[in-house]
Length: 329
Image 1 (tube, rainbow, N blue to C red):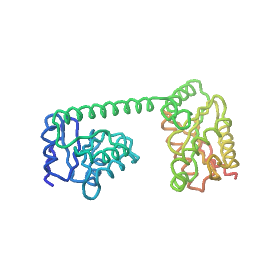
Image 2: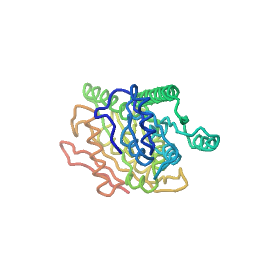
Image 3: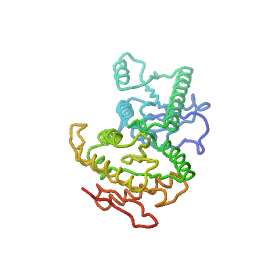
Image 4: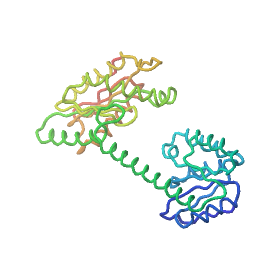
């Protein structure tokens, strides 16, 4: 196919036109080129590849009968894919004007087509409908970005409903400043689910999500009211423990470790024995200037514990004694 895509993408909305007829593609391009950037494909498979590689595409116009992957197969693939952007993309199908095309239109609609274009094209209708769908996609993207920004700026982890990393960092800096100013104890604890990557790979994302929700509920009753629990990333939580020295924190970490070790996960149809490893960093044992540095430290320490076999804790060494690694099992 002759490559007619522009060398430099403009700020115009982008439309993907998929048709094995060059004449049809040229006809659509002629109508839309003044307001849209046009990307072309000769069949559904090529169109699918372009969708995966170009997230600027806002509207798809596709023929129904094409080699390799036809328009129906393409619509079905798009509507069933895991990518939220593609799944909600406006899809316009090119259909014939004959009454016999009614069944094809109904089939396309059932699969998730947004609109239809009837051959021969009404240029005014084609332009108006493409404008409308491009605006719809732009609005949808704006809403998704707003939602994403709200989640990012929130203080609550949407999965587990405990604090998120952002809040933990802010609260940790406040507690660190207070502890430093008043010469009080403060400890940071990281908790990592042992073998989490393999669990997620074997049992899937849904089970791994259930595990993290279950773990957050299991840990909260063990903690003190003044402690702050947050989910940092998949399979990793962290605790800020004000007024807790190194030994206090070791006891707290051991209570959390034992609680998980003695409580099998039974929230889904499968039952799994679970263990966690902990990393402990107390002010004084190590001295950093930010909670983020302490977070990095406890994640390194819990990773060390997992490397040693998991189901144990590793504490940062204090200036007067070597690192402790409670390994009671």
